[in-house]
Length: 305
Length: 175
Image 1: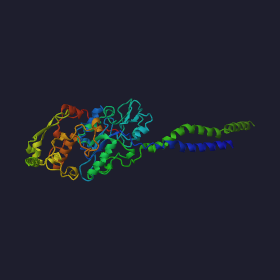
Image 2: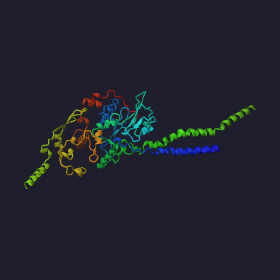
Image 3: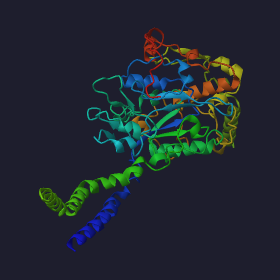
């Protein structure tokens, strides 16, 4: 009777814990960004693919020498992605209506609720009040979980470093510029203001205003306003976002919403489960050992007989 | 009576002047404008203003409502239907060279309509390139106007600073 009560209690307690504990942390995932967070509105209709932003990024972040000069347009033959040598790249896409091919700059989008930050188990990542997603490479253990977690495939890895490889990505020029209220290097050099720097909330209004004023120029959508809970970098485009390599299937839920149920279970698993299952194990095997021993003993005795 | 006559004459003169384009009023119109005189990355170059006046003929095409024929754009004439010519017509008179500085963003007057005014650099590049594309005439490529200085060539890793050991096609990790 006592054993049955104990098991019942365990089951009820476990069920309550599994439902009750995480429900407190259910509220995460509704963060709409810091009020003073800065952002960049990328107007792809203005970009002419001059690659000046790539050159500026290379010099500002003191990145290694590129493979080809920054005024070489042959790089547009393929769709490049960010790497340890280039925190930003501009790609050219096909215009399906025979118009000028659109270009899009690619870099970290600095999510309001970054997937990389959520996934990092050593807390190397920080979302600063200014809106930048930065990371501490001294803390980074090079596990590359953030590279898997990032929905935009942005973090790159210093594969060239044999002994201390770390993750590498755009940091919004945080340490040299953003922290001091200055725009990132790419924005400053952009000749056509395809990149507009400002408060994220202002940029969203500005983007909608541009769409309203010149509706023929844009698709009525600001990519990054709502995607994955919102990003600091926002995109305007003449063609649907998917045609310039922006994934429209990511949805509006931040990455943390997909994993919070699991993460909410972690404390329960770590604290309750060991006690619960050891208890069950002990109870389940309480008489068994003795019985087995007895049985063996009797077998031996049988053999003797 | 005499006083009224004087005022009337004054008004007539003002009205008369208003119909005369600024060019004839002795406002100096430069034939050539040297652009990029402060740049570190590019050599200064000449913008042939006189040539553009002859080709385009309409000042407001580039100068918006500040000079030439009144603005025709339906969006602009909501306010600028009767705007008279302005004293300052140069690009830098309205377009800031540093619109993204902390001070500029903080002190932005959010009550005015033109919140989304392009910077000086952007205004020029967009005006020049977009028109050249439309007219299929005039330079579009970067190098057609901008000649690198030594610092510029180093910045873009081009010319004498071009990467020497071009690696075999493998550089893009994780395709």
